[in-house]
Amino acid sequence: MTQTPIHDAVRDHYAERARKADPCCGADSASACCDTKNVLYPDELLAAVPDDVASFSLGCGDPITLAALQPGQTVLDLGSGGGLDCFLAGKKVGPAGHVIGVDMTPEMLEKARANAARMGVTNVEFRHGYLEALPVDDNSVDVTISNCVINLSPDKPKVFREVFRVLKPGGRLAVSDIVTDGPLPDVIKQSLSLWAGCVAGAVDAQDYVAMMEAAGFTDIVITPTFFDKETVDEAVKEVGDKIDLRSVSQDELYKTVFSARISARKPE
Ligand SMILES: C[S@@+](CC[C@H](N)C(=O)[O-])C[C@H]1O[C@@H](n2cnc3c(N)ncnc32)[C@H](O)[C@@H]1O
Image 1 (cartoon, rainbow, N blue to C red):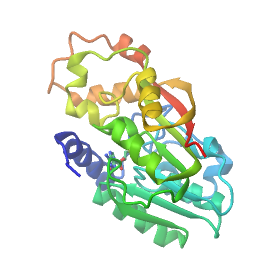
Image 2: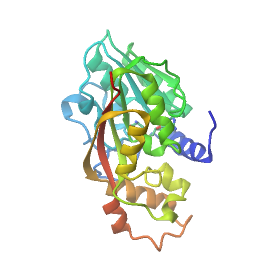
Image 3: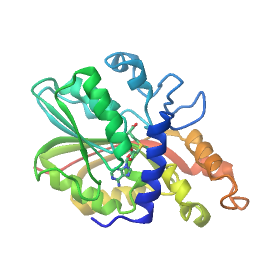
């Protein structure tokens, strides 16, 4: 697995997030934030985990409801962060099921494993690895979930091929992610900081579908959920004066970048 400067920038960014326990974005966001209520999921779902686990969320949606998990299933979470979606999935699949969270950032794995130990969870494990080279057996997973991570990969076609490899025939992909409606300005796409902030790596929804189709997926559905103004604001704020964004209209970005629910299936 060849690591790129994008992997390094993204890992540094999320290592810092894990160390600070200060996820994502600004106050009263549509995205979830550690010191504000996590509004991405129904309250009854979040009631299953401690408050600090529920609020340590860097996601942009609710892949758990989309995934409609069943007892006994094996679930893979791409970019598991602090582990929230893994713990919620673990409740759904129950003791006969199994959840694997994969993440490349050691600080995130440490945090997720500490949360699992504290909660006494036994059907969830966290593995170090990359979306582009998943440490998971072929044809072994019923449902792959992910929350705001695939946009961060520098090689999305490889990610979809890897997800296809590990899914059982008939297995499903159910993710929340950031995509775009139209191209992003070059100055945005070239910023590693904006990439780590879930903006620069986002691709057009049509290209996202084409990549999934090329990997072999069928029944692909992309449903826009909300324009992700907060993610744009946060990412632009973090850039500061590192790059000159004067040529970029923030209003145009607000209209281009959105969160979506994405589902697909590996044929039988
Ligand atoms: C935006 S956070 C989302 C975390 C979690 N899914 C959530 O909803 O809170 C992105 C996570 O994905 C991980 N990540 C990003 N790119 C990755 C890659 N190519 N391979 C493995 N992990 C990756 C980061 O380390 C980070 O923990």
